[in-house]
Amino acid sequence: MKSLYKYLGTAVSILLFAGCEKYVDIKTQGQLTPKDITNYRYLLNNTSAYETGPRMSDLASDDAGIADGSTQQLALSASVSYAWFANSYTWQAAYPVTSTAYTDYEWNAMYNTIAYCNTITTEVPGSTGGTDADKAELIAEALVHRADAYLMLINTYAKPYNPATAAADPGVPLLLTETTVQSLVRTPVQTVYDQIIGDLKKAVPSLLATQTFNTIPSKSSAYGELARCYLYMNDYANASKYADSALAIKSTLNDLGGLTSVSTANYPLRKSDPEILLSKVPYGGVPFSPTVIRLSDDLLTLLGTKDQRYNLFTCLPSVITSSYTAAGGRFFYKDKALNEARNIGPSVPEMMLIKAEAYARAGDVTNAMLWVNNLRKKRFKAVDYVDLTAANAADALGKVIDERHREFFCRMLRWWDMRRLKGEAQFQKTYTRTYAGITYTLEPTSNKYTFQIAGYLIGLNPEIVQNP
Picture 1 (cartoon, rainbow, N blue to C red):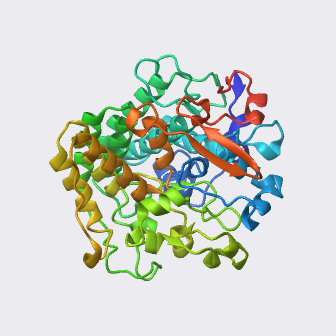
Picture 2 (cartoon, rainbow, N blue to C red):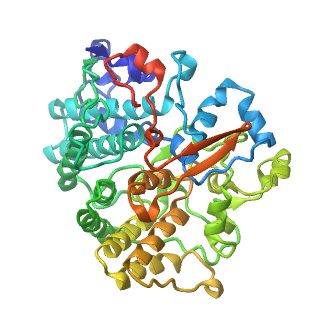
């Protein structure tokens, strides 16, 4: 048994305020009283506490392509503060040693979210004020946030889902109640996925269909999370089913065809973007040099220069800083252009491409390409758009996966896709990259597809078994 505080970080100490004795003894000035349901509404409205997910995934994926010997690479290598960036990019342990400088802030942030959610699910049933329906809605929102956090954790720190081994593969510590003392033994992958699905299905009946802001969970959010979850369990029928449920509520796409640039004047912010089902962001928010992501040549070739995602969401090095110009290439730009962190939560385009993949895997080439092309029509200028076609089911599946790469680059899902597809002959590939003069390799059978847990965290909690 270990103290939960030891690995969640100091931020957790503020989370349990509603149940702490020193707060119970305070007599508030009329508006808030201890155990009143309004406290928990306000706690859930602190949406930044629930949004954070991993940033390492984008660096490990083939989205990134740091120019070796460039000003950016030299700056990254010059400070221990950027070691996580270089280690993630080269498929090494991001936080390998026991120093506090190497604690994993992404792990901590996701478990902080879980601690907030457990406060809600534990305390709201005994709160005063509000109806049973009000309480059920608050608990449902917390369940969606908790499910999302566990889905991100399990796809970062555990092996890809394999139905033959999931019951034995180490997952992540599964914490479901508000307490400071729990076992941190890693729960099996299957059990964690079962909990995610159970939380989401339990939440759906009590959620509003949509919310004013994308940061607050809704039915469409829960359905989107379920579709994503089932996709990464390779259960394409259920993934398609819940994608349908999400799209029945929310299906608007942003039309990129008429834009020449993106800014807050012509592009929706994350909280109100009609494409987003639930807003989630990578730890750290908007990156600035040297931690901006330089895009790989393979990704830029796949995008092509007529794709508006290339024109609007990538930029030349000079836009980042003049010192990067010599390295050439292009950088991810969307978050910098809008001055807010990019969304990594479920979205309308994701639901459409889940539908497309399910059709392709079922051998329905026509419908697979219909869903792909319905998305692509909103990603090109009309003069540049041409429908994609596929010769057969395998060709259709390949085009779906390519479209996922175009749509979700630098938004976490490419790394997740590389993990789940590495066992399929059609998508197997050995990746290499050179950093600081050393060449690194990622083979399909490599354990490096699973991030190691920070050495500092294991030092505090030795019952957490390390990944190989």
